[in-house]
Image (cartoon, rainbow, N blue to C red; front, side, top):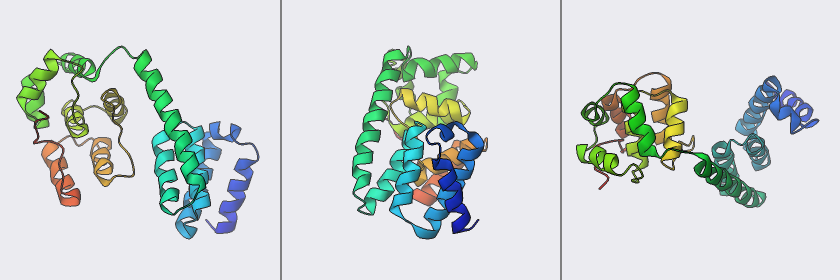
Length: 216
């Protein structure tokens, strides 16, 4: 890849944008070209452009990550873009809440039952306080921390798509912006659900862990 080649790919992509965003091959080439130029030039205009691509794709977490990078560089248009994407994301969350029939607790215990597990087996594997599971049984709408939601998802050994879905029911999402989330995602995507190994890697890299807390 060269800067000239990358710019040619981007130019061709924008000839029919946003329609080209639905073309997986063109989209792959575009993202690869944009990431190459951003790495070479660290230009906020390109960072914002890639963020807008993800905005059109409704991948709001990636859009926010890129818009925030541009905003950190004091690039004024990024602030307006953040406003748009936050509004769109909140609208999407409102629609999801309106349409969904399960809370985090309801979905969690349904999965526990479907997998033939016991509450004790899950809280021991997740390294969370047994009282949390009892409280969640009594009140499936109980708020829990993002770390605990992750730990419980890992204890169920869910694939990453189901982890993301379960986290959304708890009001959370993993972001590529944060090393903590990237490490957790790496372990799940590689089929390693050993909470001790995950916590060890998290503590070594971030000084924080998933479990070992009570959530009140």
